[in-house]
Image 1 (cartoon, rainbow, N blue to C red):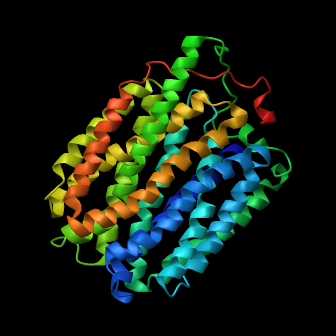
Image 2 (image 1 turned 90 degrees about the horizontal axis):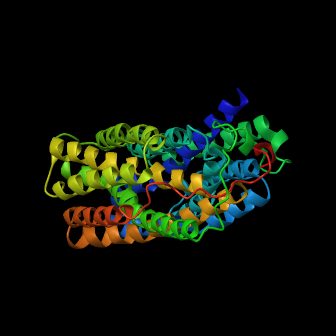
Length: 410
């Protein structure tokens, strides 16, 4: 029971992490362009500091988690991001909101290296567990647009920062109360999460071929992480604005735009469950290649579409964008040593979120000069680059030797 309860807390944390990081995407598109008299391109530039922080602090977060306490870092995440969100809701200028988003990004950086390190522990169902956790995160992506659009219409944009902020603080206190006995035991909770004991692996580290395959696979993981970051941020951040511009015939209010964005994100996110099950059976190379092809096709046909056609094609490319998310995390979980896993995830996410920070100015520049059609061609080209890299993956992952210590000692 305690294991599943902890897994639930980690899933809720993933939901909140992505929700907080995308509240401003909807607020800027549907509220602040009118209230502050700035263009969409000008406004979203102020999200860049938060996205930089989201990447920059991932590596130290993983480092502290491996050397202090993963549970302790989760407490810092829940409570810290909650207070940061509440403070952001009081912003009265673009500079103030940029500072608030930086704080949200700094605390938000904790979740991915720490939470995933406690979930990706090997075992026969690791792919599915990572996928379930990914669905929670993507539901946070979808709910950010839905929740924020509804509150803009009903109470104003500030409440969209205040309400989830207070909720996160309360959840953090509940987490602390539930697992305070583990905070003094270094990384104890990683012994109790979902998957069971770490699987053993034969030590091939002396093999030159094994080492070469490991280096090649790691390079591909980090390359595809960077390019996938362009796709994920380009779709999730821009889609509320894309829908606001292109769905005039079926969505006339912020709430309707939020609902349609939520439905696309929400239903597409369940592709991760399918991908997770496939990863537990087939090679990551085969699964990854299919997701890349799906993205190429639907990004290429999106330009010029409006209303229901745009919604249907957006659903298609989001299946590919969300479906690919668990794959790199699965490969790292298979390859990384247990005692270093949070640090490795931190390195992976610092690459991903550093790319996120560059994509926001790219969206602003492309939208201002050419509109969103060019953005979709850029995303299609990115998916082609991913496919080319994925085809160089080995059929079998080079699993690193596991720690000789029992899992409970993590």
